[in-house]
Length: 322
Image (cartoon, rainbow, N blue to C red):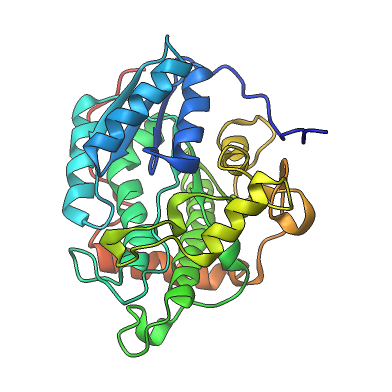
């Protein structure tokens, strides 16, 4: 008997504008497709223009009436993030949904971003922090829902405060967990500061569970010439409907967090199945490393320092049109 795949109902989103990072394939492409099908105007910031064009074709085939477009973005470069921010501010359109989904995972050897940060911390966390900072006027104008994608890896680990860049003893998996813990703490702190400052932004976090995505596939730019053993095992389990999710179902928690009238700020959403590895989206208890408001405040302040950006004093923009 075929497995019944989990799904959710997404409310009509026209004429809202949505921005989804990491939407050229995998989970992000699924998220962007569903938003477009629900009527949102979807912006796909991508690093690889060829993959971006393929993603556009994929979405337009499934949502022929959708308005979907590409912008250039390399989250591992603060200059690239700033350029995208400037472009979108010049377009002067409010942003109603931002899904911070893109990421890199466990390069076998330590690598750095264009700005000298360990590549996972610099891309998964700091790149997205900078994006939120540069888009802040548009997010506030749109009273946006900001959903930040963390990982089941954030269940354990900590912030490596004495060596954020893992320069002394690189451990790819622990560095990945750190990047996702930091990003989750940031997403929760964004909600607290929005509520305190009256910014009008609703911020929550999500995780996709475990699914066969490209995070652990062959990535020559990360020094990984073959898919990891874990990726091959996950793919086999997903194909047989065992425990884990699919690339499509893994996007449902973020979609729920970003669109459902029942999803709330400061909450955590993930798959509700056994071990939270797969299944329909459900609210989850915060992982222990994500519970400290003091750690979140420290992450916020250090992130502002490292990016050179103040999230409380956003780059100004003219009055956006609705």
